[in-house]
Image 1 (cartoon, helix red, strand yellow):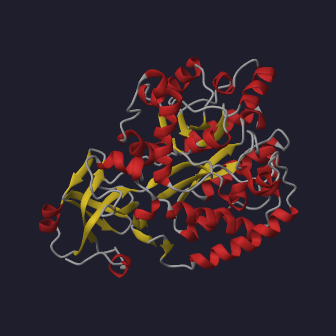
Image 2: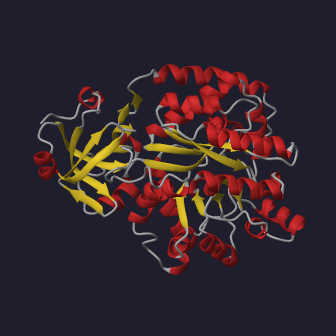
Image 3: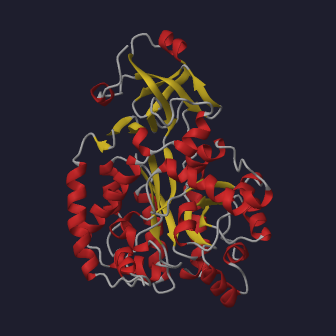
Length: 462
């Protein structure tokens, strides 16, 4: 047995590698004295460490004292090409996509798209995400640039192609959608998805057709649904129906739908989600930073609605996202009903990993530490002041965990990050180039903010 070192973990896993941490988080819970065998890009075996050591005596074995092994987290809703302007959303009112994100993405050239997406992928990996669902860039470039950025960074990506056609030719839009689904059908790390910004951005025909194309391909259609009051009101004026009701009415609501946000949902719409098998990305940080409401996630869980957790590009720390998921439910619903548990901790770890993988269409591939699943996992240092005195580790990971406790991030059986930085490419160099490009992009992007920067607001105080 050897101690945990990056050199040992960087070795090729083609012949198999036995990792023996203090505990492994499985679908059945946190299992002490368990181990995993990683071969190529999958978990070959998961079980009691002593049994696996006897079963695989010839495998190189690495003891991981003071660590637990968790499934990699899944960000069920991201905008990778918005990373240059993340702070522009701080303190701004809802529907900032019109004033900030559309102008920003429209100002990106090919290099900027690649660097922005790779920067976002790096932040996600640093935060414990091994999969991100990219909701589709508005930048006027080939989405292969986004695919290349995530591929090069080493993160798994559900890559959305925007299929808005109210201002475009429907035939051309749908042909591009079919080509996209084929283009990435057999990729190792990039998985195709279709996307519509909001229901009103596509015709009813395209909404129905993309739903069918995605369902046939085993992919998802990502749509921002019932996120803001303005969007709900526009749908009521135009169709006499709320957005989710409208998708149901035209036949575009089903298991292929990944509804981003779903914060403003009526009891009827909750029932539509439950009955249709549609999935939701619950984005609690986005609700706090720019939203009009908090999705009723605990009620969705009780109704059996499929959902994962998404950042919406806010911040790429999976532990803080899980905390926000529980915290938002506590403030929005738990206080009023006397619910002091609000998911009991385990709910949010499960939805951040297995639930997210299911929501983005990869439930059979990732999100769990089980035999045959992709070896997407984290090694978390629990010998820290925050976690060493543990009485209930799942709860403590939700409320006290943070990305500083991540020793290693694996995707597809390969070590991608060690102590927060890439092992096979120059992360600091990327950050430096991103800082340079971001200045250039923001100088030419016609971004409009409602509020001044925090420094200007402080200087102008009475």
